[in-house]
Length: 136
Ligand SMILES: [Zn+2]
Ligand SMILES: [Zn+2]
Image (cartoon, rainbow, N blue to C red; front, top):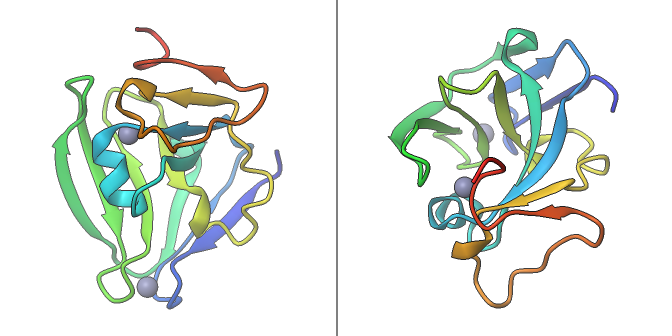
């Protein structure tokens, strides 16, 4: 996938990724359902070392993921756009696909935590599906 840029709906926060993305996924965990508005959370995985905020300051909220890891989710305090989440035990920042300038390449290769999926959540044909994280 190409290098990407993105930001929030109101334009206050902008970021870019200075390296190829490492993949795309959809997380169905209950916490992500809050962040997405109800569906799975569609994300692209950006190497943390290549992820750069170029303007603005998002609001950050830390919690424990179902895996037990700490996850910090960010969003725009003005327009509410969910932006990315970061977990110290992963080398990636999980950028919300909807915040990309062009979300079209973000077709999920993985669906994770489907044990928490609602019955009406869809999965992408051809994607790998995991009831929990990819390791579990
Ligand atoms: Zn905004
Ligand atoms: Zn999740």
